[in-house]
Length: 259
Image (cartoon, rainbow, N blue to C red; front, side):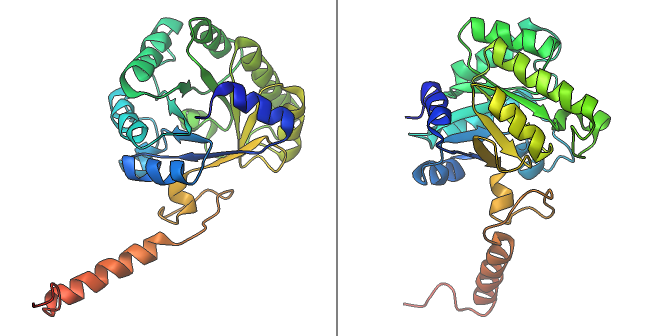
């Protein structure tokens, strides 16, 4: 089973880390069988699975429900659960309570939270001090959509330095890895070179230690994708055609076969 110590060693060895998201048992089982290293139960499931317009409405109870299902399908990968909006920002004590529930109730091995220096780094330090593994997340942070939008972050010298300092602070606080989302490739390269822990890129260029995408995007299930995503198959069309074929056979009396 993949563990945090392996991830750090893989960075040193130059072995790229594969990360994808899951939201239910079936998808998680397929990802695990395909040898994905980290399965992230991302709060993107709020939009992909539950139909919310942003990730903000998603509750901790909903995350716990889906993470339990994902963990039932996983034997090898490291499972990381996003802490949803306002389940950890109020205080370190709230974050400890929420993260503790994730580890106790779901079977996930780690949590991920957004933001860095200084307040969030302090929260991460308290979580890791009591044995809760934390993955950080800097750059474009979707839970800050009303402040940042979905545009690329770190394009000015000031913003780039802030993101770099956030990443450094999260490493010092004990984070075992950091997601770098939608930032310039040269900034992601600088962060990756400075940190001893793995960086996981999404729209952050080639030089990160690993890459993550939303599984619904790579499968072509989403109606609209971010500019940095890539579809490897168009399941929207495949599924639509299968449903149409089934409907035609039922209406024409061809299914089920008469025996």
